[in-house]
Length: 163
Image 1 (cartoon, one colour):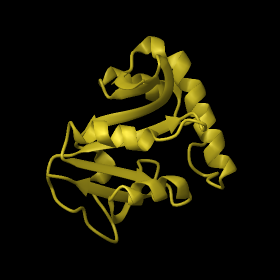
Image 2: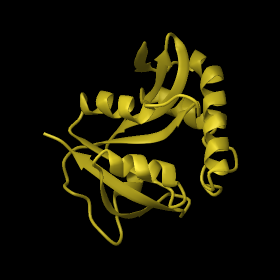
Image 3: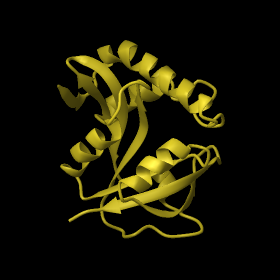
Image 4: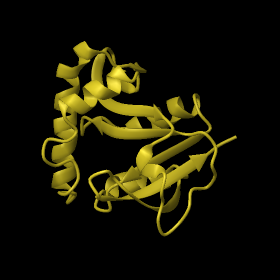
């Protein structure tokens, strides 16, 4: 049975192989410029957990996915280019979503869980991450424009609001 729970520090050794597998899948699908140079690192996951924003998806007790679910404000979302956010309502962000490649339906599971906790979600992804773009649009998100990470890297930004 699938369950989502807040991650704890002792989960990190089980989370990192999931991140590594997702990175390999991204690179194999042609998305070679995202999640490079060791990102997301163990330190990034640690920081998510410290903020009570790191979550794991378990299946019969086994960690099969990881994601960050963080409240606004997301500093890199303060300015959006070539578009606009749908609204200025309070929102949450999903970052660093990763799952084992053979585990399906994680995005569905995470969105259902997230929308039980907020009415507005914002996400971003790399231009080369066609798998994530497909999933984002398939689930009714609206493309809003381009944001830039603190590193200066461009990301495509999306938002979905439900009532």
